[in-house]
Image (tube, rainbow, N blue to C red; front, side, top):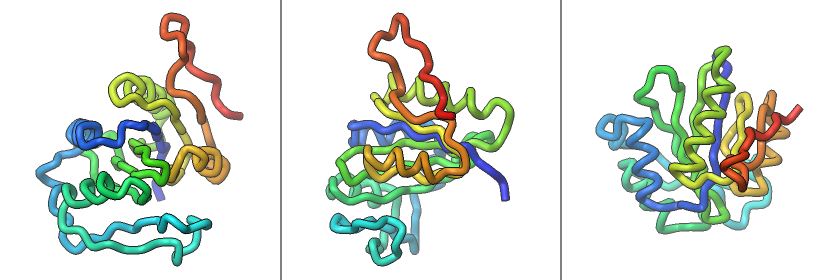
Length: 181
């Protein structure tokens, strides 16, 4: 099994513009648009334990566009889309629709010496490009389902390198926040 470093950015910009820009940047949309015989695994709005299978409903979808439309039309539904990356140095692209009407953008990076620095660079870039305000860098971590879920995901990952704000309030004197021990 290959270990991956997951980087996630949480944004309130749950919009078609944000999603399309992120997907176009990291995926070959023409290749991944067809999701024939796929289903979304949607966390039920009344679910209290996301670790239980009965907390989920399944909704068939035929295309990436249809899956994105479901996420935009149902703002309290939570589910993740796992997409292949066009860049061979990225293992996977993630777009997650959160229960609190937010969006998580994510990448899975292969375990290399430079992966932590790449993850930090992605979070900084996403803070500007997609208005990501919170971020998570962790080993083998699932995407958070809402803002409060960031801490739960950080605690459950094999190793958490960072969880917190993607940028300082003072961009001139901004320093990268310290990593979680």
